[in-house]
Length: 227
Image (cartoon, rainbow, N blue to C red):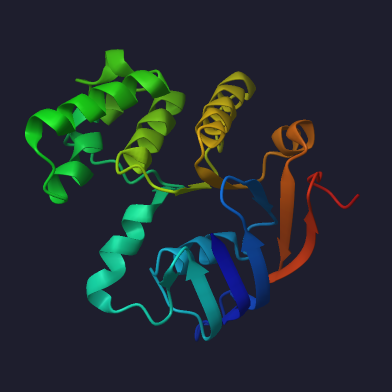
């Protein structure tokens, strides 16, 4: 599903990158990506969606050779990977319904079919009653659910979630993680970058720990800290 071989990313401004990262994630896995700020988590996500290219190494996502992928096929790759960005990237001048349907509109989906998909997905993530509200009218947890819905609307094989419980209270964080687990149970591969020690330690899923751009630990049933 996902395979990185000896991937490095160096930045000219001295910012943290990645160094000789080799990693494989199988279809249907749930993986926690942990590490301090600047350890390389977001860089890894950006490489997977071809938002940037590595300085060296190979990256495979399904049948896509990400590094050699022609520019005109990048959109095909991104349909396979849903992303919940740390800053959410919701459009504040559009309703939640309009935010979620946008990727379908851009892909040319028929209007009636697109509306049905959005309604079903908003119901699944638990914010169907907020569909006509604007982002500013929603709570932090509801905004995360909206971002997750938008990331899932094209039925991706992979979901990347960058700090989806950041700045949320413990109960709301628990609810968001349960939603991600439910999505994973239905077959979507989920990689969640997080600083949430309690969530990681409670679930004992696979944990990949980064430090200064290097993988320092990869455990099938891991904890947040060094075990």
